Image 1 (cartoon, one colour):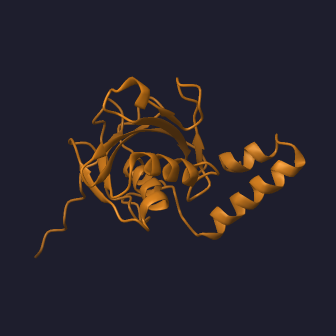
Image 2 (tube, helix red, strand yellow):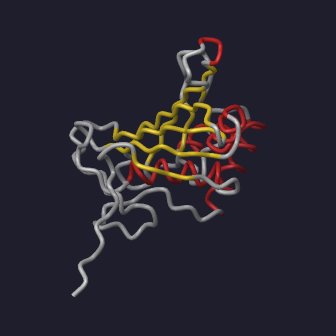
Length: 198
């Protein structure tokens, strides 16, 4: 099966499909491997933070500080994921606010400026789908993006690092040029244990 972006292309009008296919080809050409695969431990970069059912299912929750405004953070993240993201397997999801990807909560004055959601599909034979949720709030030094990824299939005790990978890949795709600081906010997707020194 082709990735989400490739499958969407097949149902679009020919002129839009050409643009969509070009985007997918660009993602493939980037060489980004977005799936941790079945080998444990995974040899894929950023797949070492394995979660074992922290949320009743495998998940990962991280806080990311970026040195830009909440509006710029939302626009940058939304744009980077809109055409499949770094590996071509991300899909923006409809929001309760009636938008695709991110909704604007600023009129409600809740302290959260933007809220969003994407799905990520793994490229292996089973094509697992994960949900990644985001909130973006203002901070003194820019913005804080809180990101939460969870395996959608029930019974996923372990994720082989995929939920952490989903978030890290999205952050690298959107904010690597700006720089960002990533931190854990709970016990999900812990840092891999260092090998014992003998």
